[in-house]
Image (tube, rainbow, N blue to C red):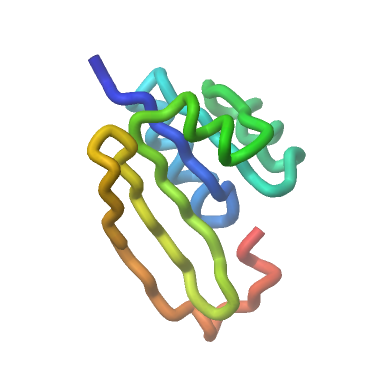
Amino acid sequence: MSKALGFIGLGVMGFPMAGHLANQNNNISVFNRTSEKSKIWNTKYTGVICKSPVEIAKLSDVIIIYAYLGKAMYCKIINLNRNACENVSKSDLSEYNPRWMG
């Protein structure tokens, strides 16, 4: 049985990443700060659209957060079963225009 995945952040990078995960796992929930982006994602992929990060946490075994914070992309994976957090990657994207980040 596959783990229930939660994905927060459907920007330029997060949108397709969550989509690839949805294609491999039929138990995925997504949240984006703008609900319109979640609705667009749901026309292309199958998953549960959540209204808050709290709802994602209630439905997920593992949460992937992909967010643009200032000048850097931030990715964090949170395993709710073991209550463990691992910082996966942080890369400086300051050379990119922030408007592209969704």
